[in-house]
Amino acid sequence: MKILAFTIATGIAVVSMAMQTKPAAVPKQTMENGKKVYDVYCLACHQADGAGVPKMNPPLSKTQYVLGDKKRLVQIILKGMNEPLEIDGESYENTMSAHDFLSDQEVADVLTYVRNSFKNKASIVTPAEVKAVRAKLK
Image (cartoon, rainbow, N blue to C red; front, side, top):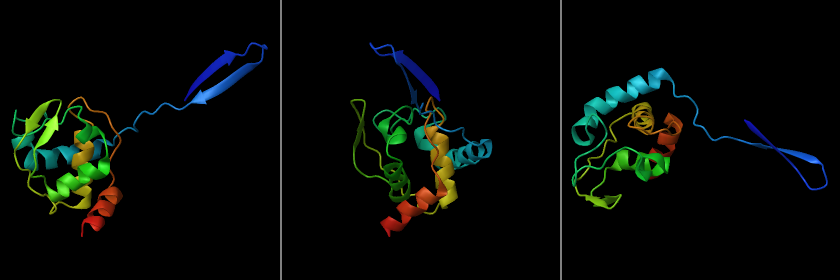
């Protein structure tokens, strides 16, 4: 928590607290498990450094698809994606297969890994969040 203080013209000191929005530390085991899932199911298309393949598979570094709405990201994993995607002015055309066979824990771990690797820093994805999205897709 950061405390900010300033003085009003009348001489009265006012103190306000501003919450810093740092993501919570990611458990080491979550990152290790997520990397294992990534290495098996994601690495071939998105590469070891998360840079993707130009015009085919999008990068995973600092994009709104990765750092933005977690529900949308979970849906992409569970349903796949077969429409062109534009990121930073470049179009990516390759189809991504659905990975709905992964458990809620595996999806949460791999997305948490991606959201906190490749120069990314974002909140974790929980198995409960994955389960809720999965339930809406049925």
